[in-house]
Image (cartoon, rainbow, N blue to C red; front, top):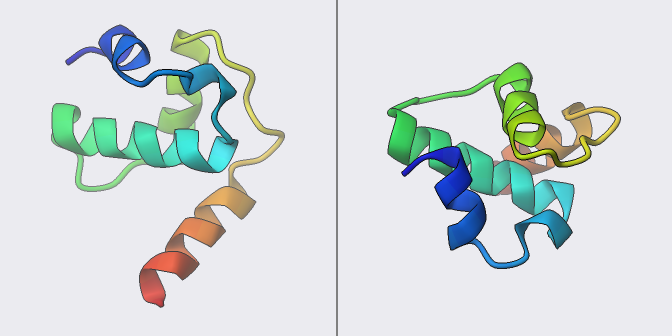
Length: 71
């Protein structure tokens, strides 16, 4: 599945929160690009390639994701 296909497969992707978009992009990179981990730059490229507005910083969103995993 390509990134453009992901946009079609996830209804309302553009309207989802940045937190949800980052989770979706992370899943896509893991499942379809065989990445065990990813960088903020790679997530940013997903936003850019799909012409979505980026958050000012990915740091707070990634921190929230990591904290949820640790619970």
